[in-house]
Length: 322
Image 1 (tube, rainbow, N blue to C red):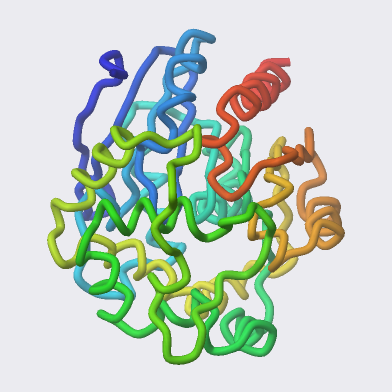
Image 2 (image 1 turned 180 degrees about the horizontal axis):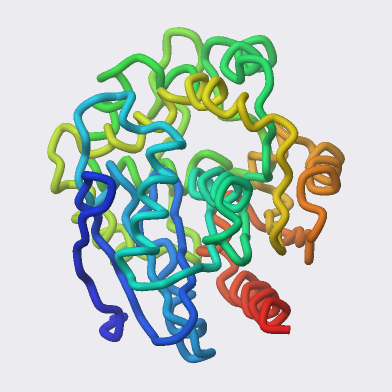
């Protein structure tokens, strides 16, 4: 399956990254989130390639088949931007359209704001552009308590060990269990509980996820053994550090064409309500092409609704081509 996708490795910014690629033409970079990989874009490769684009989805630093730097502070947003700029150059391109989901979205939004010379269009799935401000973790603790998942992830080794004990089961439980009834709510670990207590084994897989899909993702993550999820978790351990680093760019808007897509049942809506998202988009993306809200769709946007997401991407790319 997906035999037309080519796999390679490239070293950028001092880190070896795994790439999945298909097609020829203008470059489109697809950036995944947590706990995902290049494979989360499996449904988008062929349609975008057939439309005349060179589609490249890296495993971002620390994830799946890519290298994991040891230090926690090697996972800041500026490191991610270094990876992105180095990747565009390594691929022999001058510019790219950058599409990001979940954690990939802040990288995409930041790249569009700081390097509009390299990013000719930006798409964020799930996570909207967020300006720097007071400590995000302090605000989250005040709103959702100490059990909020981003705070729970801060202790090195804790969530790492829980998730790595059975990689495939962890992926299955997280992807099926953070919204078991489809309603947006913050992901909170009850006092005295563990992360996996909040995501029980599903009775059956949703129609957008197969056991074979989980096998592919689990095999990629398992390469890192007991550190299977540590790279991704280290992104969360830099949330406040990222906020401090980005203070220098307060007030900077995203001056390239933009698109935002979110599921109406995405848990992000419980953290950033729809009216706030609309306000942020109006303030930060003056060239917004569209704000798409997908009904009956949770957090795993491009996997849950591949046809709708692909159609939105193709419409945006057509808009960019004028």
